[in-house]
Structures are given as C-alpha cells and as structure tokens.
Image 1 (cartoon, rainbow, N blue to C red):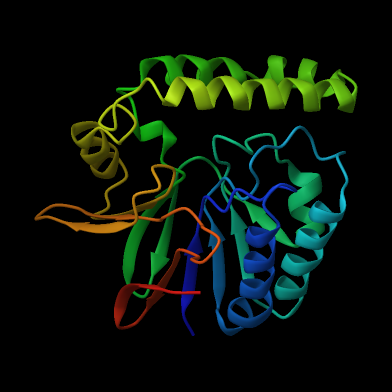
Image 2 (image 1 turned 45 degrees about the vertical axis):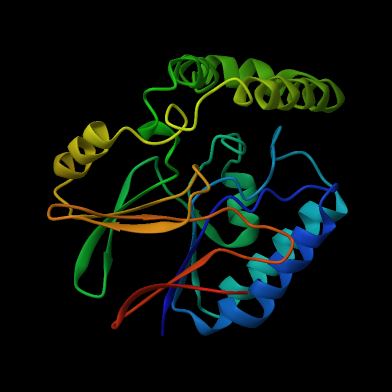
Length: 235
C-alpha cells in the first residue's frame, strides 16, 4: 500500500473546483493508502478551530471517513493555516505534526516540512512568520470575534498577494545551503516539502529534495511513495 503526500491545496469557498478535487481524492484514492500526509496549506487561510462552514464540515467528514478506515492521516501547518489546532485535527482523526518531522518510508528516513522555513532569503516573510507564530499573539488573536478575525485574514491575504508581485522567484524559493544544513541536522538524505508550488524531484549526491506542487482546477499534485520509489500521479 502506498503513502501519499499532498500540500498547498488552498481550499476556499471561492474555489469550489479545488474542493471537488480534494473530496474526490479522499473518496477514491486515499482509502487505498496506508498513510496520507498533508504538508500544510490545506486551506487558503484559517482563523481558528471555532470557524464553521459547509466547506470545513465537508473536509472534516472526508478526512474522518478515511481515518476511520484505518488510514493514518497526518497534518503539518502551512503558512496559510498555521492556526489549525487539535480541535480540528482530532475531529478529522488526524495527527498534528511539528514543523519538522522525520518519518520512515520503506526503509528510508525522510524529513517532512511545509517548506516556508527554508525560504530564508525572503526576509520580510520570515520576520512576519516569527511574529505570528508567537503563542501570546495567537492567543490574543483567537480572543477576537470570529468576524473580526476573518476581516484581518482577508486583509493579510490581500497584502501578501501584492507583496509577492514585487519579489523575485529566487527570493521566494528555498535557500539551497540552508536546506542542506537542515537535512544534515536531522541526519537525512531525503526531504519532502511544499510551499513553493514548484513540483519537482531534485536529486544530487547528498540530498534528494521532493517538492510538492500546488493544486489547480485540473490537476492535483499527489506524491506516491511505495517500495518502488517516488512518483507524482495525476488526479
């Protein structure tokens, strides 16, 4: 049975085609796996586990249906949905992983992460990330009314979109030297991450780096890992 890795689905009410694609994957493909790893940005944004909507409810049910069939489901925070907590993951039957996690894949150790922490050349983003990941800031944010949190999230998304237009592609990609350093720190020669949306398998002498792609209306980036190796499969 294979292990599936996905990231950067960016589910939102404004993109129903992505929701349909994700639900089909969970209904048809995921039950065939021994494990499914979601490496961040399942949602386009997340303002707290107390938010409810038809979209959120459908995603919960879909993941829970898979986990109830004995498929191990795991989630790592992305830069868009880092506020997802235990309340949501427990409702889905998923296990919440730390920012960096080493797992065994058919005899090989692999390091998993969303990927945003590897983009250290994007200094402005790293400064922002440091602030919003402070626990006291998150507690204060969650104390705000849901409607206010939603307005703040929409404003941040708008600002982020404008900011990206002014950045070079190199700045928004991982820093090779830092990425290699992190891999050595965890003692692995295989790294799987998302975030950059640049689906690819980079192989060099010391490190194999697999980048998960973002999901589009007609394409779900799904990494299939089994005893034969690694490959991206179309959905």
